[in-house]
Length: 108
Picture 1 (cartoon, rainbow, N blue to C red):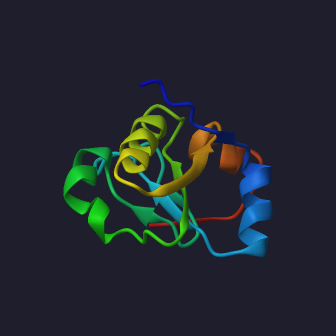
Picture 2 (picture 1 turned 120 degrees about the horizontal axis):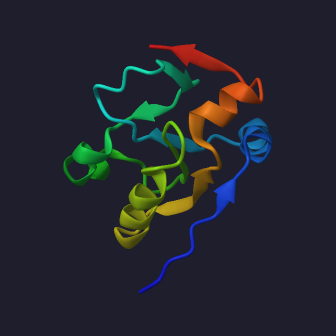
């Protein structure tokens, strides 16, 4: 089954965040060294750990998934949708674009 995942721009996600609390999931690898910036209040769960940890995510919230440059977020989105989660999209361009567009981050 082919699944289309919405790609949300940083500007669109920022607008959503102003209106309501959504669950932001960052699926970058644990040993990702290029950058330690995360969207404020996002939850980090490396893609490799997703199958073990996904049941800890809220089923009653809309979810946006990100990574560094949109290489893994779509895979994670498809998996969570199959598991019954309300994934509204992935961050287009990942954290790399989020930072480039000057949206707030926290370093971890």
